[in-house]
Length: 250
Image (cartoon, rainbow, N blue to C red; front, side, top):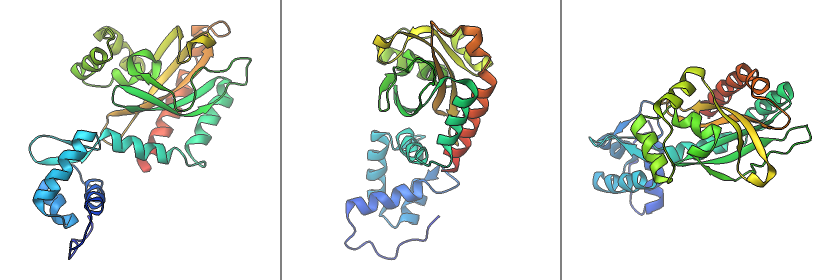
């Protein structure tokens, strides 16, 4: 952890918040409130207020007993920045595309939704309807289903209820966990006017083992059968683990 700052005189609220985020992101987390305050040099009362605001906004999480860790929203921001690196994740996605011939997507979770941040288009006479920046509810996509399968059951049900969608059955999500991937079989994806698609997706996990998003292969249902797509599941799972390592490294 960084050394305690000797003086906080004249520090702005933004500077204090950034220092607290730095300490929150330090190795060895989650961190106690007193630990974050001491390491950042921010008074304990101010540290508590800032951390409470970060928790409310999703940038931090707390166990309710005085310990704080990195929140999903901050992890997603970090993952998005890491995904920009051309020498890593993009090459993995392109390699997966070349090995399968199908469109490849990387999407990160933001609460009850996913945002598509990377896409390698299919070389076939088919263009995936999902566009960069598109947001989709977790329950409505294969990537989202792979994420839901690895969340605590009550959290997964609550996310579906919040979206006004029926929850996936425990058996459905158990099958996804056992296989390691989820499949949307001839369902309409984001931008459904482009037609029915088949999508195979695997989750990507953060340092704490929680799913932060996933990658997928997408094909036109009229051009690719389910068995044809599923035979690429080993390559998809291998690519997902590679993306995961790069995101965690970042």
